[in-house]
Length: 78
Image (cartoon, rainbow, N blue to C red; front, side):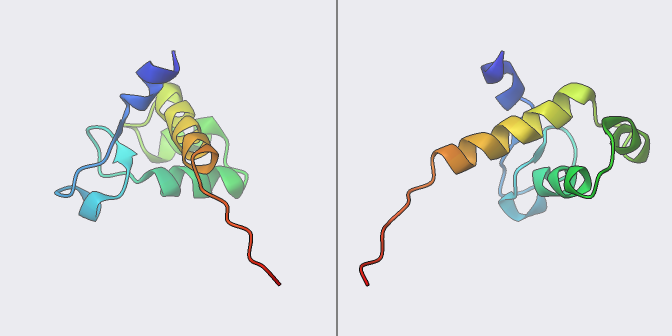
């Protein structure tokens, strides 16, 4: 299922300067995440952006989780 979700996210240098977006739109993943962080519901987001589905919102969350999971953490010596 998670691979299916990732197919809903697109990174294309010709769309929004290569920022990750919901596939087939110009709606950046970070915009959806920001709206969720402000407390917007999935319903409110889908009403504001009719091209966004519940699955697309889940895909944005999954994409963000993978980005954080794959982050390299380096310890800085004091």
